[in-house]
Image 1 (cartoon, helix red, strand yellow):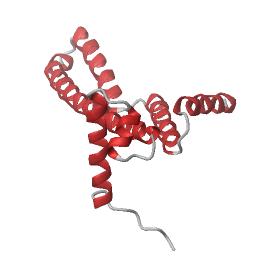
Image 2 (cartoon, one colour):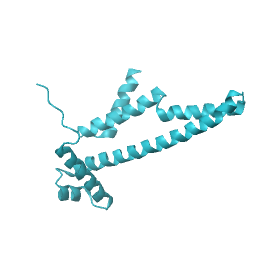
Image 3 (cartoon, rainbow, N blue to C red):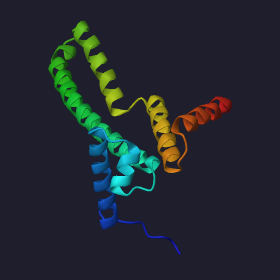
Image 4 (tube, rainbow, N blue to C red):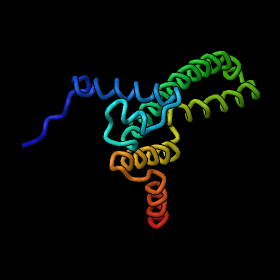
Length: 150
């Protein structure tokens, strides 16, 4: 029989997220991972580290996504302001438009090979951390496998 997935807002998950945020706040205030583990009841300093790292990574990813949205809005405004000159054949405006479109493609991840490589590293890192393995070593091994596949 298939196992049912726990809801994202289940009481256990919410409690776990809140404890991870608390652990992150304690780490930012200078406590060590063993101290935090003892204070909050984590199984080990390594489990504490993983919880803090996940919380910080999520915060950084969220902040980066917000910045991407702002940059994308700015680019869209710049593109539309250049467009009338491009239509009448202004060569410098066309070059500027091209640069803006390239930047927009990067922000949106439209350059697939680059995006896939970045995503692959993130996936390998998350999987290694979930399994309690060294993420850097897992990435090196994945790179070795990719080199052999070429």
